[in-house]
Amino acid sequence: MKYLVLLIGDGAEKPWSDQTEDEQTAAMAKFGEFDAACRAREGVEILAGEALSGPSDTTVMRTSDGSVQLTDGPYAEVIEGMGGFYLLEAPDLDVVVELLRVLPPYDIQIQPTVDVTL
Image (cartoon, rainbow, N blue to C red):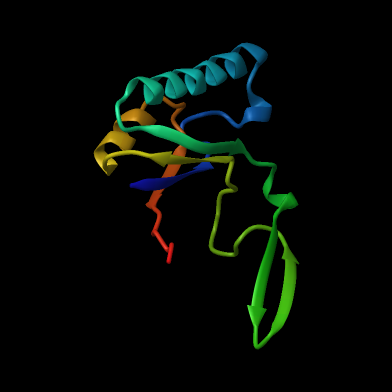
């Protein structure tokens, strides 16, 4: 099963821009540990993952009655900006949660994907 993992807030981690170079290096090392933990785990694969720019760079596209409206800013319902994401293939949610404990203590949302192939 595939899972979308959204890194949606700094959680217990200081914002990236407030971290010292050593703290940023330590945080990046945790991402490397996460990658290694996923590679070592049978049935787990990181299919994609990227860091995202800040919420002020976000564009929301809404389509209603054939009309497209673009607005600046993040989703109205999202309080924190998304910092990055992973798309993982994993056997189940328990494995995903176990592996994500390696990352810095961000606020994280995990959502299974739906197979829509015809």
